[in-house]
Image 1 (tube, rainbow, N blue to C red):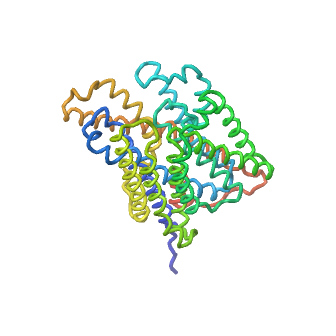
Image 2 (cartoon, rainbow, N blue to C red; image 1 turned 30 degrees about the horizontal axis):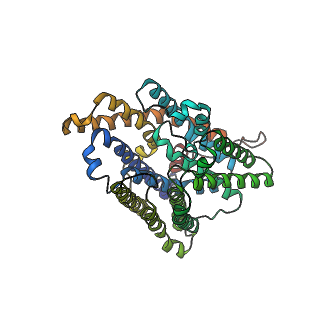
Image 3 (cartoon, helix red, strand yellow; image 1 turned 135 degrees about the horizontal axis):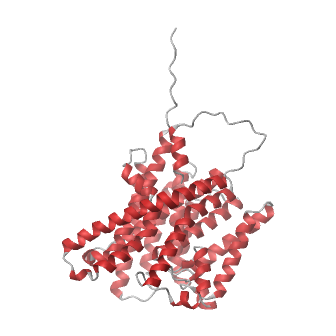
Length: 440
């Protein structure tokens, strides 16, 4: 009589590879942004020759936005719990953000980093309140760490996704993305940058009014009654869209293109799951095409020489195309094995992104004027810079991000019923355990 050998069920490959390829894209995007910000200090030759034709930083953040759009709405829909979604998002973003903000303020006061803005010195509570919402870039409030600006658009996207989820518009995808990109063409000609702040001043009025709306909306959507949640969702949608269209620092057309890019990531996920229809696949290229058209038509929207305007249009356009092609390549190769190094860089990408400007300022203080240093010396400092940034990111991820994410997941999980039977399930398969340790 033979005894059948027991074996653990195989890990579902799609679960692991999907997370890995997204991590790889995050890792690539973070490294490109780090490289972009090092150019002025260490590689001015690249800044002068390549940057007018390709914007490395814009490319990196657009890849980030595509990944966020691909992940966030589906994560909320899969969870089906707005309260849990916001708890996990809070603990995903705020702890490391608070560390970077504190370091940025400390560096500024010590003269190591960019000095605090006049507004922050004149009205510190306004700057603090705007930063606490992460919407400061949509309030025309200078960020205490320059890369914080992208978090304003992430937060606006979260507000819109939450509102759409609660109002029943849960199938947003290609149509939403194309519509936002089309609106960008119109808004760029009609809406000047910072319209609300120009009308009411950049001080307390716009910030206090909008923060009150957002706080009331969040409280309502986390409430118990369905009508209350719906009203809160409407308030969040109005507040987010008003800030994006009427008050962003970069202008209405760029802000709407950013949102269109994020919803483009969502649309790709729905098409991948055969949930968008054939038209959704064929309409997808309209989003990067409209993004390029908006850049060509409207430009940066603030004072630049004609050469600067042309450089912006070329740099933006090539970055848009490259970001979409990169995401498409990642999607096409998602079932391939991913380098563990790239996957790890993706896991630490938030720390890489937030901490690298602070490391760069230290490097700049040490190296002084890059023009006085030979190329070999600057290349060595570039390698030192990347090594220090990766080291700082490893520490930030290990001691800030991971503990905070674990706490967030515990707080977001529903408490077990005291009458429930004990959990006697076997250990989850390897892929399920991996996903629990490394959530989106």
